[in-house]
Length: 202
Image (cartoon, rainbow, N blue to C red; front, side):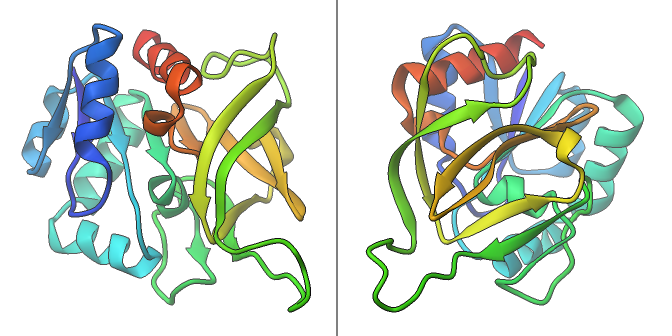
């Protein structure tokens, strides 16, 4: 069973419905005790970094999540804000992140006269940096993004894929059993379905 963590933020039903379309068993869980019944977990998220971390703290998720990820070795996938919460910290707030991956979350900054908008919103293609078990690298892929901050990995070997919005930034990362995607697979039609199917098959 794939557990989708409900800490108050995220497109939970959309993710569940996408897994149903591929015939996978995914359920929303609202208590940390249910984590250890899962073979994989998803940390979703939409909104502000500090709000997300506060939700994890107030829900008692931090210690169980750390234990799950580092002791079971089971796959964990962060989506959008969930990916950012796996990093060290964000320019969006003052609360420390989970620090599962050595990365910082930075704000898009463009000149006032720039045609580039913040948030980065809409469809964008990605470049897969190396062969991996989450994102196919043999064809052009496009995903749906909505975010004002981006992940900057300190170790380039953690970067699975990149995309560009004024600057090149991390679209997906992996470190051991920890995966993150900045885009929304649940909003990315066949491309997102492919990513979630690959995650289910890990």
